[in-house]
Length: 280
Ligand SMILES: C[S@@+](CC[C@H](N)C(=O)[O-])C[C@H]1O[C@@H](n2cnc3c(N)ncnc32)[C@H](O)[C@@H]1O
Image 1 (cartoon, helix red, strand yellow):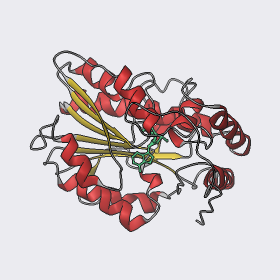
Image 2 (image 1 turned 45 degrees about the vertical axis):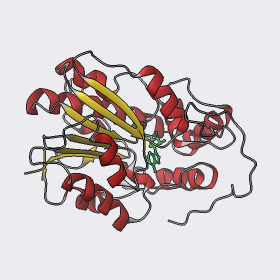
Image 3 (image 1 turned 90 degrees about the vertical axis):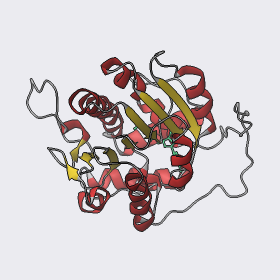
């Protein structure tokens, strides 16, 4: 997909984060627009305007974002409860919302340790301010770029024991790694660094469901927002799980992954795939 940018030379304005990084409130950012669709308040007028434009061309986007968050909860509960996973490395965390990874994990096991990684200065300052966990467990928030998995692993190792199983949670983040080869390499590096019994939890926007609207929304996003993103089909997502055992039901729309109380039958498919796999 072609990615045209209109921001070069644009004047940057906004405030500084705690890290001294500039928060640019003149351009819609993925974390803040996602927060808007989730019903949060941590966003600026540009994010809300872009969020509404995208929702106009692709009304399903709000349900997709919400289904992705609900899937995160189900997957973390499943891994903590059924597999005894007590370490989570959550990359591309997003702004704090309800049921963040450490809250779900520490409800199952208060001793769970969670490291959050994001490269957005607003996410980092809000995350550090709001995400305090249990006394028995540990929660850390580090600045990191998904394109540099080695640096992420180095930071994570300050809190997590990487010789014990870890759940790598990459939700709606790999779609910002535009090149397939690079994206597969990033995930392979992370999976290679953790032992047998570790899990990969991945979700990703797709143009296989609601194709026309999904593509139009990404074209709009890549013209107006940052960072640019791609949509991938289930076939292009399969290599992320290579060498691992995909848990049932495989790669499916997030709304359909192990629904806990399907009283009204199978939920509608959202244009956002997910999968969970264990490293043998
Ligand atoms: C669409 S939000 C997803 C948030 C959360 N994972 C979820 O599923 O609700 C994408 C997040 O990835 C972060 N992000 C985007 N590009 C990134 C990069 N290169 N490195 C680290 N984080 C990145 C954004 O700041 C944002 O918080």
